[in-house]
Length: 462
Length: 41
Image (cartoon, rainbow over all chains, first blue to last red; front, side):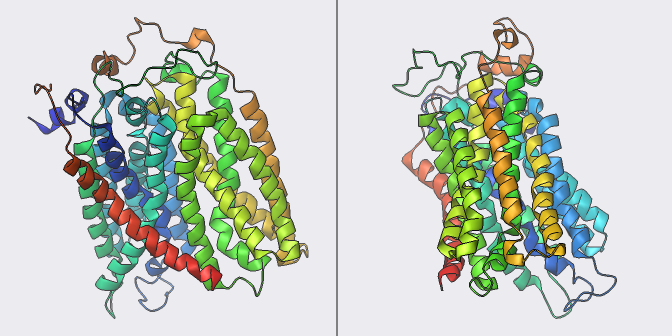
């Protein structure tokens, strides 16, 4: 069997007896690897000393220049998931995972050459562009497959995979630090070698995932599962073609719901360490702040599984209502915790907020499945991820610039974030309104039974 | 195209697959928890 045919969707169809519980670990193989992106910052400081070794020289790269690597990667995540979404959906998860593995490992190898040659644009190209494409394709590759394997618990299934994306940093961060310490010498910072080892390890992991993954056979259902007889107005039984979905108000309303939820979370996620120390001077030390950031990462990961699983019981729209209402209350409470000096209150507020930030990502694939059906949900999800790219710009800009404006206008540092918190709460009110207007998709967008668009996908399904 | 009639998944395969992703993740989570405890010290 040639490699190309092995990657083909037809060769991915599961035979009778295959356990669907093999699919979440396959998805995790990919998501845990690409989740490394959240830990890329561990390379920032070492990469500012590639020439000076112990301290930066004038020829060394600056942090501001290095910051673009991550930004580029997230930008290309959004772009590639949108552009390649239909290709991923129609070609099947194995081909997509394999391609993501090639791009992800390739990105590390090109970046290693960039570090070795001290050529920054090679790292922009490697990690930023190639790595970003791997992020986009890898992120959406198992989504629709999991939804099809778990029609009874679609939220939990996608929650497990997307939890992996949040958890990838837990593995990558200590592994990268350890590898750099092994490869570093008094005259050399071991970043290039670390990139090469990470590229090899991640390639191996992702390839294992692509080998394990299967799509269910046509008409397959879990044992004992019968589709609900009673119709739910917000859970469709029809499919909507990917480009038709983009024409519906529902898609854009959910786009804004995700964008606003992510904007509110991402802004504080990046500034949590500095914010906690400035709001509680003398109470939260830099070491304790680092612990706080670690705890937030755990809640970010756990929230992805918890909230997506919960959405299977209370519904997707209701889950987002919880995010918006509870988030609003918590953001409004944060300034109060600062004024009364309640570290515990502050920590609890942010841990819940960040769990809902993660939950927003993991619940949205099932929300899209409810609205647009399963056939093109991966491709539609790909387009929706542009909301993440947009939020990646809005969130940090809002937090940083408003804090800067307040500090330069004489507001004490301990209170400099208050305005931001109220603005974040306001964003969630807008998100609540958008979510409120999400209704069932008009029947004119539903695909007809004889619709021939996406023949390849139909071939595997029918 | 798949020609074999069945593809029975064994318990060992499930354990291996989940261990392959679960063990590194658990180690990472434990390491993060240890670091997070500094918040309460």
